Image (tube, rainbow, N blue to C red; front, side):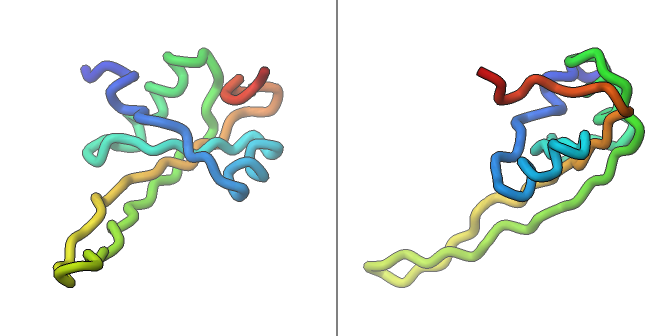
Length: 96
């Protein structure tokens, strides 16, 4: 079995993800080969919460262009997981 901290890479920091936190929905960047059951088990083992549902999405990297020589490149593809927790559970990600 993989280490749970290798599956969950980082939380997504955006206005939309902050709005979803109020509804017990958290968004994470995960390893590209991670499956839904692996993400479910990783979140439960790291934070000790009850996960109700896991949705995943693959986001292709944007095409970039260099200014001087007009070469094109690509940003890396990412995989995100949207995790819904049971009522009464929360993850203390950004609390002071």
